[in-house]
Structure formats: structure tokens, C-alpha cells
Length: 332
Image 1 (cartoon, rainbow, N blue to C red):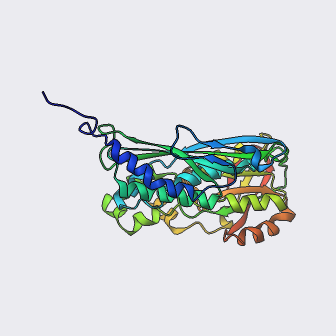
Image 2 (cartoon, one colour):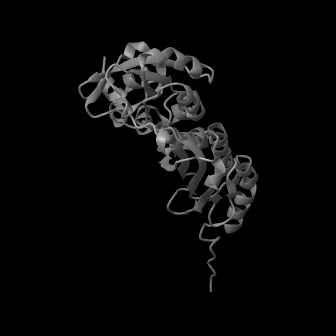
Image 3 (cartoon, rainbow, N blue to C red):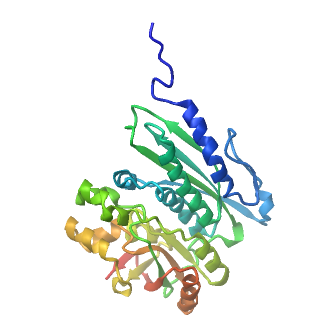
């Protein structure tokens, strides 16, 4: 009689335990005040009261990295994709003025490869440190047959706090307010299904692939600093859906926004993608961030102050538009 163990079926529990042992110190390096227990138990504990919020609201977000993972796999570059995972979650979180507290990841793969997996976690740790949050827990799933041996998937979950009286909701936005665009670091984590249709595998394994793998800019600390000193009325993270779908989510339905696309230099790689795809600008601005990863709506007389503050965090920014009567987004 042939014995078929869990390991023979493709799941190595011992390797999984070794992986947890290796990443525990990495996760612990992200600890912030409030952490009671982290990786290793069945759940993680965090003491919210340690942060002394008067009227705390819990804010939660979740996201993934999408098909950018395929380019990471092709290029054999796994040390930045974890930064993307954290960025996509915490950048959503901060749009209401929330401070990220802790982060959890879900990592699923066909076959657990310790060196590659550790690189991914190092990226997550780097993203947590950059956003001021702690990697408090997660899940690693080895799923042979469901994923090929060199395939993996990632999902992230961020939890933060904001004072109820300080929530940035967009309700105060009015006609004449200006739109400040914050520079992106590249394509961030959207539009990669299209990118893969336009570039060959050999191209994506080379230098162009590394450009596409530039990690998503994390805006948490610059934004949290900004909202302390400037009247930021609304914040939008420019992700899937680009300008057309994301900006209307944070301004009153009775108002629209005009965007002047000449007010900043769109990075060359976006134009190259547009040329290869043979699509119009409307399609580009609905698919990609076009060099603007986040927008803030604020009074016109506070634009220069905001730009100086962002520059101190090495974030370039431009006045790219204005709130108007009407609906939707007009880009000209």
C-alpha cells in the first residue's frame, strides 16, 4: 500500500513553519505602540486606547497587486511587490485622513520558495515602515495544483484610525477650490493586464520590465503632515479607473472638476504605452494614473504652502485643475 502524505501531495508544513520563523523578526521590526501580540498566534491583538483618540473611528481597506505580479515573476524581481501591496491599501486608508495602524497579508503560492517568499515579505515590511504601520499578522497558503509552482498571489488588509470630527469627507468642497496633483512613481499597480498585451515576455524580463516594477509611492506621511496644517477638503487615490472614476468619488455630486493635462509633464512611458495600444487620451486617463498618484482638493490660497510641505517629503506636486459647476471630470 502506497502512503500519500500531505508533503507528497505538495504541501510542506515544515517549510511553512520555517518561513514563519524567518519572518517573525522582520514583522517585529515594524511594531508600533499598541501592539499586544502579532505573528504566531491564531489572531493578532492591538490596543487602540494606547493611541488616545477622543472620538476614534476604525477605518479598513483591502487590495491586491493584480497582474503586476506576472511581471515580477517574469523579471525574477520579488523585493518590491510587497511595497506595492502595502501602498495600495494604506494610500486608500489615508484619503479620509486616517492613520494606518496595522497591516495583514495573504500570500498564496503553488510551492513555497523560502528565498523568494522572504523577499516579498521584506517588501511588505519596507512598506509598513514607510507608512508607519505594523505588520501584525497574515496567512501563507501553499496550494499545489491551484497555482503553478512559480505563481503566487497577494492580498493586503490595512486598519487605521481617524478622529470622527476630523474625517476628510469631501463635503466641504466648493466651486473654485483647486486640485493639487501629487506625482506618482510610475504605473503603480493598475493597468498591467493591458501592459502585458503590449510588451513581449522577453521585453518584460529586461530593463523595461524593471521600469514597470517601480513600486507604488506611499503617500501616508506626507498627507498626514499636510492635513495638520492645510485645509485639505478631499483626497482621491488615482488607481483603477484613473481620473474619471476616482475623483468624482470624493466631491459633491453637484460639482465637477476640470483637469488641465498641460499642467504637468506626463512621463514618457505612458506615451509609449498609448502609442503601442493605439488608444485615445480618454482611455489612458481612465486606465492609468498618468503621472499623478493622488490628488488633494484645497482652497486656491493654500496651494503654494501645500506644495512646499510636500516638497519636504520629496513629493513633486502641481496645481492641475479646479472644481467647477456641473458633473464628472473634464480633461483638456
